Length: 234
Image (cartoon, rainbow, N blue to C red; front, side, top):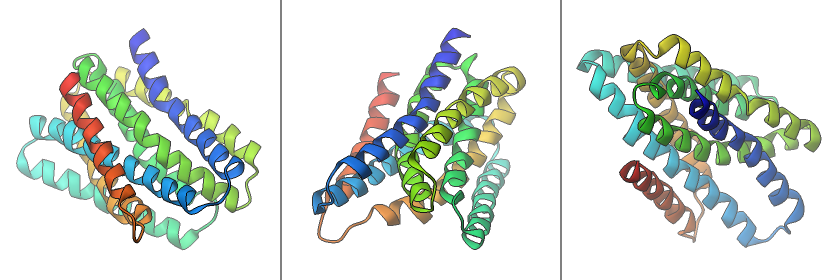
């Protein structure tokens, strides 16, 4: 239980760390082309990490536990669900759209983390690392959007601090409710994969692209490479 608490907290606290990085980056660094390029490279790095989490952890669990049609339908349902939520948020606008988009993949992944920790602790540890690394760029972008929409820096950082504990709550819920149901865990991870892949292609990858520079693309490759290293080591 101590290890579950530690790794789920490690995954969640990156939300607050991502907000702090955004605060430092936006308020303490001068606006230069290099700053703009680094910002997009950071988003691309997060895209690579997210893609590696889908390809190396979430989807393999579904392939292992589910038959073909349940796997396909669950994956497409996740993508469709996230599409509808994204469409609703784009129509509504406001200050919380990016924040809600971040939570849409953070919470299901945290529940899956708790569910698989008892039986597959090595995979759960890798998933915790993936969740933490992908939360950094997502929180970075969410902080920027919230402050530009009118939230104060202090209020936004306080919000991110409390959101960091959502991962801990989700992991505990998954551990006590789903740990004895590997098929339900596989459904959840496959559903989350479809939604995450939708967000990745729809939002993160287009936003990270810049003309006349290759650094963001290399950042995405580095992010995926780190995912491969983590899978190989653990």
